[in-house]
Image (tube, rainbow, N blue to C red; front, top):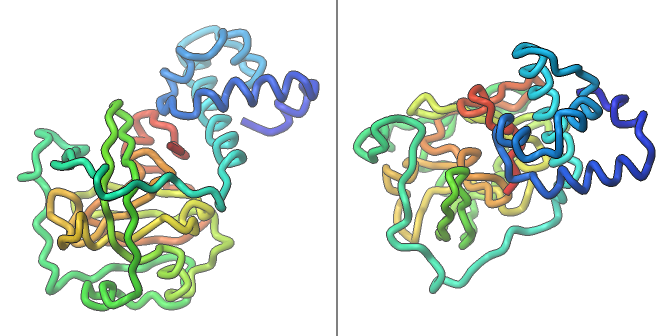
Length: 262
């Protein structure tokens, strides 16, 4: 949706709309967002679309999702930290979840760490592939944070790995780029905004609960983003791309909200 649709509204109306939307930032699908919103009339006001048939409804829903992304990005504070927990709060066993069926860890890719190479593409100075040993030799930190799944459950886990913004610095990534895209060994794909990529808690994780990251949780590495919903935390990462072209992601093609802040 174009910003001019919002700017036509009075200051009071804009504040009321943003307040209402901010209460619903966890509603990740277009249709769920629509269901929770006040009325079709208010959506028409926001999007500048008349809802007369299925096609116009889809266009409107797309505009609302775009608006939701804009609002979440606007509200995101790169300096605000997600809550961290004591070890006594860790969820054991930590749940397994996947985008494929059957939902079984036996279906997880079996990656050979000895031959693994992380591919770098896009807007970076150094695109040399990284071996797992080289990645694991970088300075690491540990966080105990809550993973929030869009399916309605959450769990607290302990992850250890490299601060992602430090890795981006190592490869000379252009941090003025808009997006960072992750392509995974299980063919999963997702992307995040650059401010989230640079957040202090965004991590390339190599360990879970002080053990080498198990296959079920994303070996040889996953992205841990405690400021986003779980499906924005890709596992089995095989390639990273930095760029300005919007690449979306697997679940986003099914209507899940792209920004999906937790």
